[in-house]
Amino acid sequence: MPPDCGTMVTAMNDGYEEILVKRQPKTTDVLLKGLVIALAVIPAAFGLLFAFLPALAIGVVLGFVGYYLLLPQLDVEYEYLYVGGDIDIDKIMSKRKRKKVGSYDKDNLEILAPTGSDHLASYLKNGKVLDYTSGDPNVKSWTAVYGSEKDSAIVRMELTEEIAQDMRRYAPRKVFFS
Image (cartoon, rainbow, N blue to C red; front, top):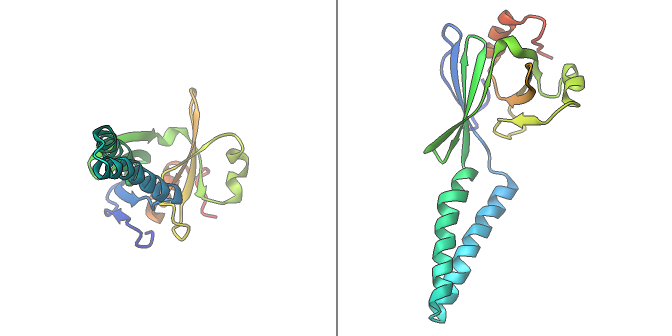
């Protein structure tokens, strides 16, 4: 199980497990929060100091827009639902809004290996990596490559060893531990 970084895991039972991973704030997230606050506070303060109502109104509107539309997207958790080799991933923003970001079928799995493994080298050249991890470099993450007739996906997740072992039951030649 990954170290304590906001990760919650339910016990593996008959090929079913839920994992909740809280994404660590990035530097750009902190700067964006500061910018949203500044864009709201500066016009509002200017409006209050100089009794200039349009500036006050602009500050209030920017504050509400930033608070309700932008800031919730910066507080993100990912929920993995593992059932019998298939993985569904939801993105939870500010603990109040949920969005399904991916559903991956065991039949389309091409490879699963720890992130940074030599087995992944040829796959990583071909596409964009979808990162659904906490961003903590001290937590072990896994990279899975899924392919289908329509498209392929390279997905980075923080799975437990039990899930990787269970996935190896379904695809023994496609799951690597080194």
